[in-house]
Amino acid sequence: MTQLGFTEIVGLDIGKQALLLLAVDPQLAGVAMAATAGSGKSTLARGFARLLADGTPFVELPLNVTEDRLIGGLDLETTLLTGKRAIEIGLLAKADRGVLYVDGLNLLDPGVCMHIMDAMARGMVRIEREGLSATYPARFMLIGTYDLSDGNVTRSLLDRIGMIVPFASHGDARARAEIVRRNNGAHDDRLVEEQMLRGLIEMAREQLPRVAIQDEQIEALSRAALTLGVEGNRADVFTIRAALASAALAGRSDVAESDLELAVKLVLVPRATRTPEATEAEQQEAEQAPSANGPAPTDQADKDSPKDEQDKPTPEQIEQLLMSAVEMDLPADLANLPFAAQRRGKTGSRGVILNNRRGRYARSIAGSLRENKIALLPTLIAAAPWQKIRRQERLEIGDSRLSVEKSPISIRKEDIRVKRFRDKAGMLFVFVVDASGSMALNRMREAKGAATRLLQNAYVHRDQVALIAFRGQSARVLLPPSPSTDRAKRELDVLPTGGGTPLASALLAALQTVKQARSRGIPQATLVLMTDGRANVALRPGEGPASKEQIMQEIHHLSRLIVFDNINAVVIDTQANYLSRGEGRKLAEHLNGRYVCLPNAKAQQIINVVA
Image: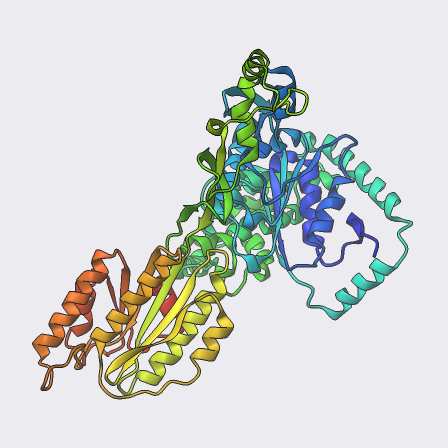
């Protein structure tokens, strides 16, 4: 199958427009493009490189890039040969005045994101490591593609990218058929089309300084940003630049309404955190405007005002037109937009764990090779400054076992550096569900729904979910800590309900589950207890029926152990307010956790509470 060119990609027209605007005005900083796997987003980005001027750098950034490869570091080969420290520039500096492309923008390590953002802000990259100090220009356009099923892009990085292309999928059968035809068809016209686009971009760049935008249009764009709940002023600047670039690409000297619409669609709509809804006061004001302001202006008043001013729309009118034009681009659920979703926060705070066996290589330290993996490059760097001295020492003592010719590099025990890996710590959510009473079936159904949704959204963070049900005389672990949604569905399909309420047994089972998970490298845990808190079965029943005081002592003791082990807790009271006697609230106080009353808890409500 022949790889398609920029003009031959099907279904990513808005992505093509964004890339062309970026080519006209590199100060738009970049384009982030979300689409499903196999949609052609990567092919489109690489085809974009052929539209740029000859010699423009196009640097692809691998997801597993190391810090020295990213920002630069010691040129080991030159250093070993000359004995003097030499610098090798990194990928950020190599992309200067060109394009830095990342496929899988949402999978970048946070440390790599920080270096990219710093370079975008400063326009340069500074090397301060291994005794080296240098500065190199790094003014690049960032193009990032990603699959939403792998999670969201870091908001701080998205904030520095000018245009965000809305999610696109190939759900149209005709579009899919056209993709197949173009993959199997001839490509004779590709070079001609790409050459025409290159010429169009060059003319637009020359036209850009001559394009004018009216003050009313600037104000309308700012008002639209406020209406959509866009935070910060950087987006306002990007929107104006996108509108100017669109006009230049069309060969106009003034910004038209279509240019404003495209700018709002690419810059403001993806950053929206609320829908544009007019308040009742504004509607009443609009309806009462004619009567409040008196009779309509007379013909004489029309004659007194210049005709240009009469025809000139106000910022409010322009904003209204823009909102009407982009209304269809706003999803029904704003949580699907990157900024709205991240504004609501993620489920739990994620950390990292350092270990010596698995994860992402984070740094090197001095150590032994007995239980560690050698960090070859840092080891050679540590040994490099001592090579001349060691060669001289070996020549002086006449070491015949290791001749200089056979072993040009001398590495000693003190030079050894071993790897330390950084892995996402993840979060364990333990659902502890009361399976006794008349509400048990509903509680279990919604708990299962919440657990499944958390697992579907938790892949990137390495989260896991466990589920414990308690009824009768004891608690039962239905689902041990697992990241598998399929397993969760299988294990939670059938559950008997009714009987007593052994809350103490449930707390003990939850505590043991968390401790076992921590031994396997999941340090953070949150208990989600769905119960009314009315316990009536003791953990250790005596000869006769357990007293209420005994049951409460057990619960209080186990709650203190849970608090002592730094386990977060959320108590969701499933009892109606008028029936509750405060047991759920007291349980939350014992656990030093959060109390929420949700008599008819739904799966999404549970997820919102946990988040």
